[in-house]
Length: 461
Ligand code: FAD
Image 1 (cartoon, rainbow, N blue to C red):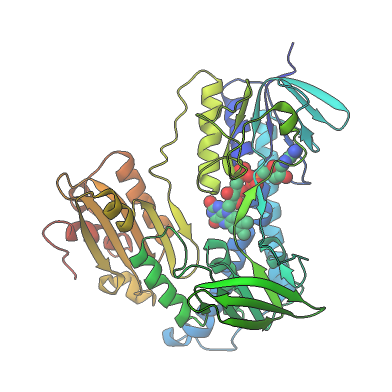
Image 2 (cartoon, rainbow, N blue to C red):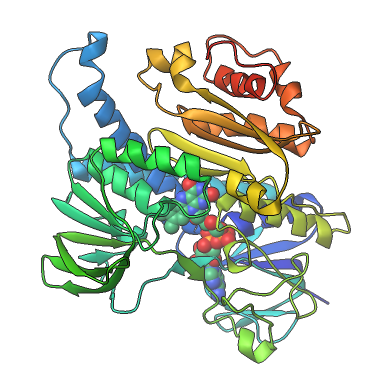
């Protein structure tokens, strides 16, 4: 007889959410996690610590730039970096302990250690082999680097090292203008570091609506970040306390170099499957090293996979949704994830958030669409808090008015986007949104105004 109905390998947002839902559905569940704490990349070295540092550094920026304007005068705060890191660690601790509590509450066994799968239906941790009717792989991802760039997590760091630098560097080069690079770059820029972002492509945040990406880059430049675009990094020459990033500009092959105290390599993440024994199991993988799945079923019977280790956006909430869907599928229910409505947020200030199709995608598909756009300069609340920069852009089907994509840069964009997510989940139209009463004065009014702009016109434009 099996020891468990389900054993989940990995206690990140995919794995722990799946475990809790399995237990709630009456399945005998265990979750194996090799780290000292639960919560995976997200809680330990990802979403949560980065947001703590973004919050702290944004507060400093507010004090330096906006307090005096509001008549708040006095000694301006200085940075106690050790204390800021302690605050970040405290936030991590509160959250990882919270998952431990939820495991106990829901009667999920946490098997501590690194797991492998010696055969279908078996999970080995240390010397012990546990039997399971179902195994869910939620082993996540790890930072990837470039050829010629060796990470030492001291001078040349990944996001993990960037979350615990011994001091705030004077000069930092960020390789890669994706979400993680820009979030960490803006933390350090606000703390006084001279930050240069070196990007291979000609635009930041690949895949983002280009209108939004351009406005976002302008906002970051105003905050002091420098950009070198279209640059192919050749190598990083690291010395004891400094490093030189050597790159070639793609347009003319000219060679250049920049020095930095710290180089952050933020060129993406790759699936993590080490030590699981997948080769011996004959597990089918994709060309990009992910576990190949069909509705989260792998090629090995009784083994499922979710989160960063499979295809799709590497986002915590995508992993969580898949965790719930797989739990439901194992329990004999439908299990569903709507991959068309997965929001993406960049937690800089201003925030940037998107869901659904970009204008470029709609053009490529040849789909007729209309655009409703509204600037936060027309939003009283945003102006009152010095956040009039940015806009809401709604893309709706030309004939049916159904909302196909929403792109926002501005205050609380990461919260506002969910209004669009709910609307899109229900197949709503721009008119549905425009006819919904929105409280005044809120940032959300800008979303409604953009919806109005899809029809007869915004009021405050
Ligand atoms: P993970 O969170 O990577 O968890 C996998 C877990 O499995 C790990 O704890 C690992 O130790 C464990 N494990 C692996 N192999 C084994 C084994 N053999 N035995 C036992 N345990 C094992 N996403 C967002 O949505 N929003 C954000 O704001 C955001 N910010 C980020 C900021 C940074 C700096 C980084 C690096 C990532 C960020 N992400 C963000 C991405 C997010 O962290 C991931 O998408 C998410 O953690 C993926 O969840 P997961 O459960 O698939 O894997």
